[in-house]
Each structure stands twice: as C-alpha cells, then as structure tokens.
Length: 365
Image: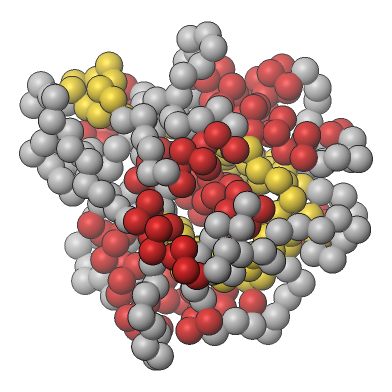
C-alpha cells in the first residue's frame, strides 16, 4: 500500500573528506578518501588505518560528537529558508548503548552540548535514538508522525558517531573486524556527523528527492550468530519498502547500502536481491559511502541520503529510483525507496558506477 512520500529538502555532512554536504558529496562522487594511520596500534603491533575528521580545535568524547553533529544540523537549518530553527525538531541518532567506548550518559548530555555549539535551544519535541545504523530509518517514521500529527513544518534527522575511540577500536580489533594487512574481511573505522531536512511531499516548496517507502525486519542469522545466512530479514525489509512505495524491484535503477568492506554485508545484499528479483536486469549497481568515509555507524543513513540528495539536485544520479538498505549487528534491518525528480541520462551510468565501485584499499605503509 503506497503511503505519502517524504521530501528531502536539504542535507549536511561533516566527515573525513569534507566539512559540508557539498564538499563531502563532491569528494565521494570522485572516489576520494582521507584514509590514514591513526593513533591506535592493534594487538599485532600494526597501525590501524582510519578516516578521521579534522576539527578546528581538538575535542574528545561528548564534545567531539557534538561538534560533528552541530555543523550538519546548522546546514539543514540554513536549507530551511523561511522557517525558524526553533520550530524544527531534531531527531538525533547515536550508536547502540552497548557499544564499547561510548561516553557515559550520552543521550542526556549530548543534546545540551549540541545546543551550546549551535548557540540556541533545540525544539522541545527533539529526541534521541540509540539504535545504530537503523536509527535514522526509525527517525524517518517519527518524522512522518511529527509532520502529520504535530504539524511541524520540517524535521531534521541527524546522526553523530565515531569509531576512532581507543576502547571501541580495541573491542573490534579483538573480534578481528578491522581492516589490516592480515585481515581483508574488515572495515576502516571512521567518524562523521550527518543530517537531512525532511518535509511533507507536495508542500509549497519543491524537492529533488522523495522517500516513497520504508520497511523494517529482523535478521535471525545476525552477524556472528553462526547461523546460515539466507537474508530473510533484509528480504522482508525490502519487500515492505517496495510495498509502501508502490514501486517494483525491477523498476529500481540502483542500490545504496551501508556495506563497509566486511563480507557479511555484501553477501547479505546479494542474497536478498537474488531471492527477490524475478526479472533479468543488465546492471543493478551498488553505492556505499563507506568506500570513501569508512564505517560511521549511526551517521551512515543520513550520509547516504545526503549523497542521493546531492546527486538529485545536480542531476548526476544514474537513474531516478534507488533502493537503499541498512542493518545492525544485532539483526535489525531497514530499507527505503528513494525517487529523484531530476536525473542525468543513463549514458553516464558507467562513469558513475566506476566512481562508486568498491576498491579494496591497500593498507601498506
């Protein structure tokens, strides 16, 4: 059953390759990265490669996460021309509460730090979600309700996360999940703040990108469970998003996902499409920001939407309809269907694919 779409009116992105959405998305479009050795040595004595953000002044813990979030939120406030920032709720998405290395009382302290960075209080209906990758998808559901029931003019969905924390890196290194010379089945830790400005579709202000469907599920063979992976959760989530959008999988032009270099995520994505796609498609390419900015956790989905928004506004997307999906280690899955109203002719598809094809980065010194 089709539901009213959401409109993406603006975006902000502060990551390893740029301090704004425009700069970051341009760098990602070119396949650039900022991968470098960080101040952490793994259990084998090897320096870890990461994607750190360059702040104007050194900051750590809650203050660092606040600085990562504040700039993208401010970008979205600026994009909401004609609307007072005080009238726009912010839904802040953070890492799961059980991740090692998180500051204490993060959901209570971080909003106040962000207010100090912005120099203004947040809307009273602003909230915090600690649900990792899928948090921003849950926030999109909350945004629907705020727009329809609370009559908010716009809603900002923001994410702030960092894997470049000693305790966090030590935990993932212990589980052999970091990309190293001896472990190709790992991810590059990153950090980022990201945000998107969401409104109702068909409002007085046009938008180049619409979110037409959302789907949620849980994967029984979650990461590290030891169970055989059949992508049941992702299949269900994608089916739900397609059902809401009224768009068939065969009519989706491209995909975008939170693939971060670990084999599990690529295998799951391939299995889900194999089980769902009944018509032959010559190409069904996959974009993933982790190839350029590393693993950024709760900031991933707003970053993905920022990429799609930039491509829609500048008319360089390889097709109008994107299928997106994202998942947590604990099995939570979410999917969405995005539809751009302006696109570049598919003749440029090969060039776009080349820029986003996963290239295994050498971590040799």
